Structures are given as structure tokens and as C-alpha cells.
Image (cartoon, rainbow, N blue to C red):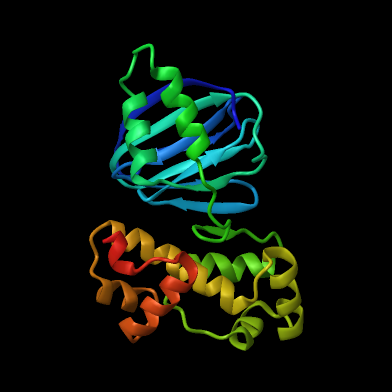
Length: 235
């Protein structure tokens, strides 16, 4: 894990704030206490709700967009790390309190708090709050449309007609470029969109309908399968 916490910054983000493509020469642990933030790299689009943080290694180009305004923290670290790719991190109550504490603490005990925070960082599965971004233009047409309208119910055959490609070709490309089937990718896109709606105060029922589920029960089941949590946990 990293050897040194260089600084902890506390920031009030406005909704709609963006940070264009940039690179850090340090590792950054980003946590939004009340905001909802997305980070995009060349390969993935990360959604970071208040229950989690994102480890962004030094040297990885990325952008930032605030989809819900609120309070955020950035913990700047240097040293060695086992995580060479952006990694979602679970923010437990103790991790949360340590981040807040390090934003103000200047006591001799700060070093112990820094080390405890580093020791407690626990990665979550990479598919929890991220969408793989394909490069094939036919797939990008489909995935961009589903991100814009996650309730779109067209099946893969209909999309194949739309982009003038074979179903088998799209099936192969989805697996090769995203590591998911079309159905799995669409489910993750819907859950990602749902997280944004839920953290902005939309009810579970309205969120389910907005992302393409007629029945809240089916939505809740898909949500728990992807995130391991209930939709009400993010409301």
C-alpha cells in the first residue's frame, strides 16, 4: 500500500462541475460524502456514490463530472500500491471518519491515522459501479444510446438491424470488448443510471420505471445482483 498521505482536501462541488482530461503524478483517493461523481478513463466510466470511493493511480488520464452537488474529499498519496488501475473502494463508517479526520487533523497522531486509513482500504469488484467502454463504432452507437436512454428495450437483434451488423458479430464483440454479454452490459448501464437517480432523491418506483423496469421487484433484484445492496440504501 502507499507509504505517505501528502494531503487531504475538502471541496464543495456544484452540480455540473467538470474537470477535463488530466493526469496526476500522485495517487488520489476520491470520496464524495454527499455528492455523486463520475470519472471516465479511456476504458471505463466510473460512477462513485457516497458509499464508495475511487482509487485513481498516478499517471492514469481521466475526466470528472459532478452529477449531484455536495461535499467531496480527495486524499493525495505517494508510494507503492498494488492497484495499478482505477479501483473502487468501500467506504465503511471508520474509513469515512478517518478521511474526515485527516481533512482537519494536524496532531502528532496524524501519522497513525494515515496508516490506519491505508490499511483499511478494501477494494470492491470492478463491475460494481463501472461500465466498460467499447471501441468498435457499432458497439459505441448501441452503448451511447443506452447510456442516454437506459429504458430502451430493444433486443440485440433490433440493435443489429440498427447498426447494420449481424447478431453473432455483436455478441462476439460485446464479450471481447466489455467482458459482458449485451444483456449484462445493459443491466449494468441501467443500474448505473439508477444510482444517479436514487442519490438525487428519485423514489425507487420512479427510478425503476425510468431505467426500463416495469416492476419494482425485478428492478430491486437486478440492483442487488449488481451492487450487493438494496436500492433503498442509496436513497
